[in-house]
Image (cartoon, rainbow, N blue to C red; front, side, top):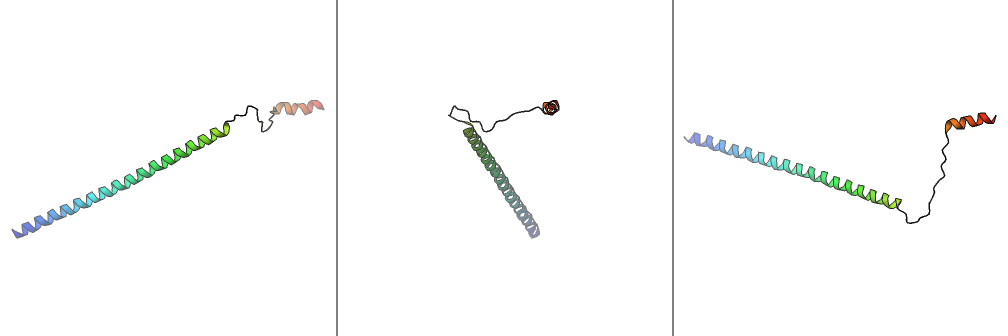
Length: 91
């Protein structure tokens, strides 16, 4: 009878030990996942913030209140076929 009580107590204690270890693992996994999600959210917020700043700065560079045109360079487009024909005609 005394042996049955020891065996029952041992089984009960081992069951409690295994269940507490399982709960500790679940809490640890939950904390790990929460940390990963937090990092992903922070990274996304940072990327969106940089994207908005880039869009605002680009728009600011394109806005001008001066009505006169500012030409940075003069561009001419020449057709290659007509450029080849012109020297031949000159000869």
